[in-house]
Image (cartoon, rainbow, N blue to C red; front, side, top):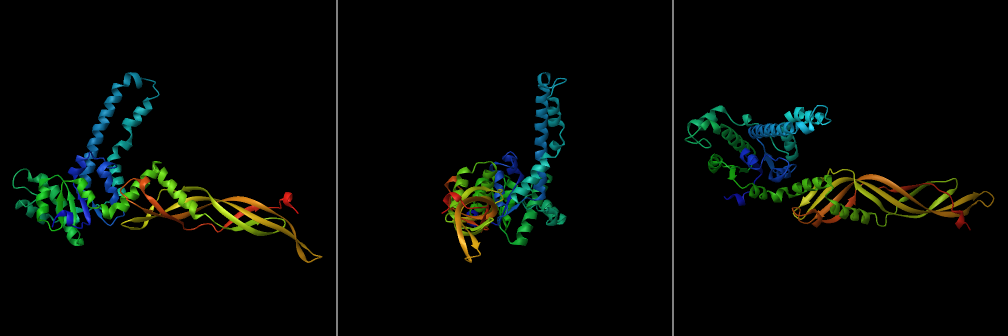
Length: 372
């Protein structure tokens, strides 16, 4: 069966791919691994690969730190002389403890953002099975060369194979390693590819909503979703078109409501914590919290009880306006190509989950200019 026709439930990415993409965990193709968070697809990040990636990052940090220190020292005569106000900045850059832990911090954030399953290889691989492959020159151990260098690969692949068999899941492995390729040829559960882009595309249908969610949150946080947000605002405005809340007010006179209409005055998201509540091939429904301000115009009539006639005497009326702000979850139904531009998507519907039912107009009294 070709890889194009298989329904993979997990993806595995070798350290060689991380290195090939410059260990840029937050952007580029590696950043696209964030699409697997909360999706039904498992992104496998075995502890061996995790430790290799962190070690490689630490080496890059050391090289970058040395280059930075050299550049700062070269600029010392003109920027960091005795008494310079910039000396504290130099010390902060070079001596900061944050630099020491930056590799681990980035890896931890990467795991959190991608929802990676950190596979504990030791739970799936026995030493006896590992040594048996080693002495029999079975893949990923080559018959020649420094076979000890292939132990990490063997541990990773054997662990993933055992995990996949246990869960009945097909895994697509991405690497640039002939030993990985040879192992996968004999594996019932793991297929091999060198094309990272093609590998990601195989999961697009399953992960598109989650990849879109990541893109949307990033765009909102970077204030780059203006046109998209305006479409949401238009739908919220349409939701409150014809809004007729109950009227509340205080007055020293007896009053009765004579009609009220409201409209959207202001709208903004309370945060960018979008959640997927429903999705299909051609739509996605998101939930998010929003701060909504409603403006309303209400008409009131006033009267006072006449104890002689035992009836209420009309004393005039007033038209009052008021604003009310509230926070509610909203449900946003989006259609279109989720892999395309945000601005090209359509907002089919917006539902305000918990709209206000009444408007408080404060203290009111007759508009005596209209008094009959």
